[in-house]
Image 1 (tube, rainbow, N blue to C red):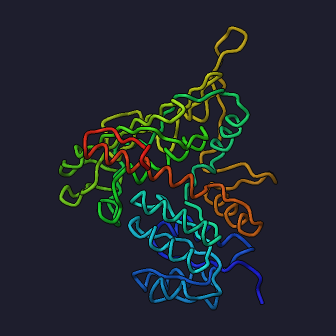
Image 2 (cartoon, rainbow, N blue to C red):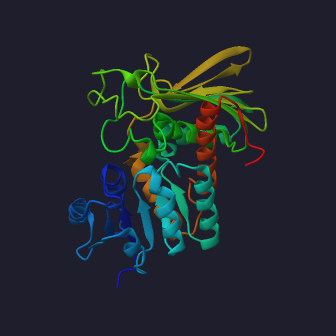
Image 3 (tube, rainbow, N blue to C red):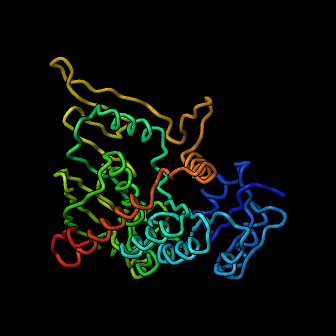
Amino acid sequence: MSNKLKVAIIGCGGIATGKHLPSLSKLEQVEIVAFYDIESGRARAVAQQYGTAEAVVYESYQELLGDPAIDVVHVCTPNDSHAEISIAALEAGKHVMCEKPMAIRAADARRMVEVAKRSGKKLTIGYNNRFRADSQYLKQICEDGDLGDIYFAKAHAIRRRGVPTWGVFLDEEKQGGGPLIDIGTHALDLTLWLMNNYEPKVVLGTAYHKLSRKEKAANAWGPWDPEKFKVEDSAFGMIVMKNGATILLESSWALNTLDVKEARCTLCGTEGGADMQDGLRINGENHGRLYVNQLQFEAKGADFYEGKKESMQDKEIRLWIDAILNDREPIVTPEQACVVSEILEAIYESNRTGKAVYFDSL
C-alpha cells in the first residue's frame, strides 16, 4: 500500500494543466488520484495524462470529496466557486490549496480562515510570485532590517494591452472583477508579504471602464468584444495601514502607458529602498554617498539549495506538500490571503460609493 499523499484536482482548465499538475507530477511524495471538471471530457483527458492508473474522474466535486482516501485537494476553478469548494473540502477533512484570489467576497475569505482553523486542516492560496528568486532574496533583506521601517510602497500590475479574452476572465459574476482581482491581487500579496504588514486602516479606490469600450482594439490575445467586457479595465487603490504606512496599488489589463510591470513592487524604508526594475535594485546611503546595487535573477528560475534551478511554480507546490508532510505552516497563510481579499473588496467598494472604506468595523 502506498503511503504517498493522494491529491485531487477540482477544475481541470488552464491553471491546473499549466501550473498545478506539471509541478505535482514531479514530486515523488504524491499521487494524483482524482479529478473533477464541469466538462467531464476535459477531466478524463487530464486524468489520462497526469493521473495514476487507478485515477477516478468524478461526476461532481461533492462525490470526489466523499472519498476518504483523498488527502489533498487543489481548487483550480473560477473565482466564484473558490470559497464554496474550499470550505467543503476542509470540512471533508482535506488539506486545500486554492488558486488566487482566495474568494470574491471578503466575508467568504474569512469563513475559509475559520473553517481551516476549526477543521485543523491546512489551507493555502496560490500566490506563486512569492517564490521567485528576486522575491525570496528581497524578503530576506526586509527581514534583516536592511530597508529599515518600510513606510511607502507601490504594488505594480500594469499591462499596456494584455486583456485575457478566453474563459471567464471578462465575466464579472464568475470572476468578481477584472485586472484588480486577477493580477493586482498578486502585486498586493507580494507587497504586504515583503512589508510584513497586514493591518489596513483605510482604503480609497477607483476603477475604470475606458479602453474596454473600444472596438477592434490591439491586444496580445486578439481584440476583445466590448459587449462581453463586463469587468473594469483598470483599477487603482491607496491603502493606509494602521502603522501609517502607505501603499499605492495599480492594476490594468489595458492602459496607454509604457511603464509596464506585473507582480512587482517598490519599497521605500528609513534605511534603504528596493524596486523590481530590470532585476532587483537596492538603493540607499552609505558614508555620505548614495548607492544603487543592481542584482540580476533569471526571470523563470529560482536558485535551489542543491545548485539546481527550480521554477517558482515548482517551488510553491513542493513547499506546500512539504508543509503537509512535516506539519508546518504553509508559506502563504490563509490569514494573509484574507487581508488581500479584504483590501481588494474595499477598493471596489470605494469606487462604487465614491467614499473611503475604513477597516475598524471589519
